[in-house]
Length: 177
Ligand code: GDP
Ligand code: MG
Image (cartoon, rainbow, N blue to C red):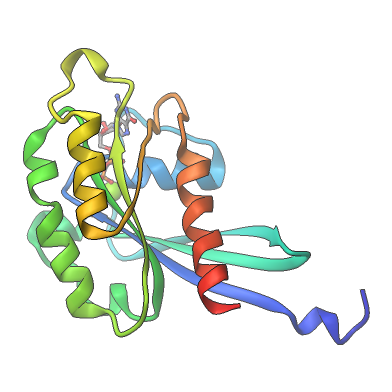
């Protein structure tokens, strides 16, 4: 492509939020590095990973932020949300308390954002069907009520992980282009 076209580049910040241990860090490591960790521990400080996609022949970079464990102390800072264009709001389908927290996370996201956010409700750990505590219908219904995309994922077996991130990234692209 010509040198003028090389200016057509996009960088989108996406945040992952949700209760502790729902699988946020593993969703990111599965998507960005195709890695899963059974005993992942919270690390100190905010971290992000960058993934590059091509959409409409344009280079789109998604800078995806992980809370790095602050959510344990209900201390996810406004800096974490600043400049975000997309969010994955994650619960664990085997723990209903994490689903009950979703409205609080949506409020927090709203409080800290001043722009249209592409939002995906993610029911993670769908490999744990035998101990499911939140039905697919409950997830779908909340997503419909709140106007969110919805997907059940498994960071463990990779189900829908790439899809969930890429729907958000494409929606942001559609919002801004
Ligand atoms: P975070 O606190 O939200 O970042 O959660 P982590 O990514 O650290 O995951 C918490 C625990 O859940 C870890 O023991 C992970 O191995 C496990 N985990 C994460 N995703 C999945 C999943 O899709 N399926 C199952 N069975 N376990 C998962
Ligand atoms: Mg984590």
